[in-house]
Image (cartoon, rainbow, N blue to C red):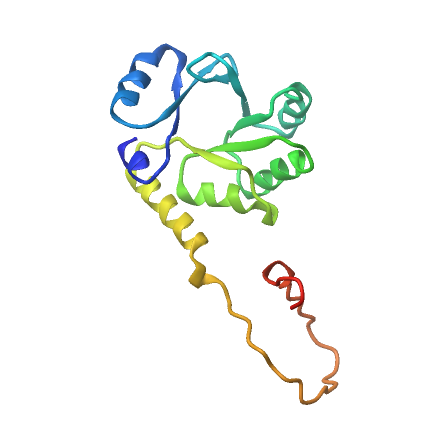
Length: 182
């Protein structure tokens, strides 16, 4: 937890029977503890902030969509799933107002959840013992947010158009990088 707090993360999930541990951490660091109990996450005032579910099949994912209609936030532990199921969960909750977070055991798994279907989930809950995973995830976020990683547009003049036959088509989507009038 120390590595996560030092890197700016402040929300942690504790078992409901470990409120003492959460309060100890709260006394030395600015954290927002949440407590898991019976498939739900609660804050210190025992207000429900999210639903929690373990999902190991497409049928369970479908059930989760139906059962948790009233929850604004959903934390999902995708047991033994890989890339395609990460895309399935993004697709399942796309178009809803829910914030969906997935439990991740590695930085690379977290990255899959955050990038699935080019939209990603609303976030990840890291469940790790190794501080390296926290450092790697922070590095990923730093690289993702670097301004230098964006390509700069340069003015160019088209001097000719030439037919070169049938070839691979290329689609460059720069609309999200442009401002009105460009």
